[in-house]
Image (cartoon, rainbow, N blue to C red; front, side, top):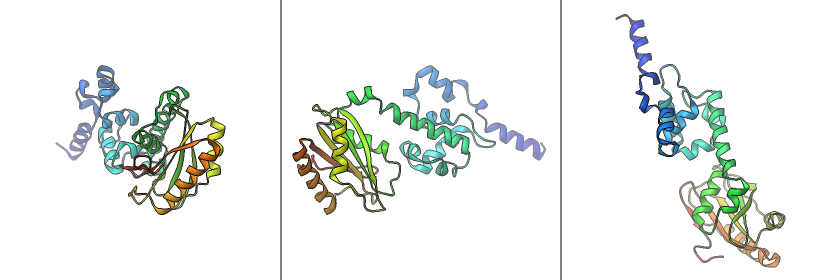
Length: 238
């Protein structure tokens, strides 16, 4: 066998055509449903095609490995995604668009009306979908009705590497416009440690007092890291 024939054989081994039909992601989605596919399989469908010498499933697995989780893939920018071998600008745009649609579908009015934010874990989950820049502190607000159902949210500010700015006026001005009965504030700690700082504690007290004056309760202040959170309410601090 010549070198060219060996190369062609190796290239052929890298194509999806050699995968049994029943194991291909798209065929499996049709047969068993999206909920039963792995994250790598779902990413493979979004990416659609591999490259010469790299099948689409390997590219998808490489994405997860490099960004550590599918959630972090969803937060990546086009510029960050194209650094992964096998991901060009077109594929990067497909990935960003797919995750943005997922975020928007989770933010439709009908979903907001149903979403109960009584549990800090649910607040943390929603907030992580909104934070795109974990290297800086991002301050978010969630507005709820009298039954703790999500009726709106906003990004109040994005700070520097270790500080963010949030004024009670900005938090409650939007709450009043939303007709909220209560407010939950969230911010992340780029350090990875969600333990509240002295500044966090002071801000929480200011927001609590401002809420009492306005008749809009501060229900919780949740401090996030990528994989954990701290709830002021759970520690009886609000």
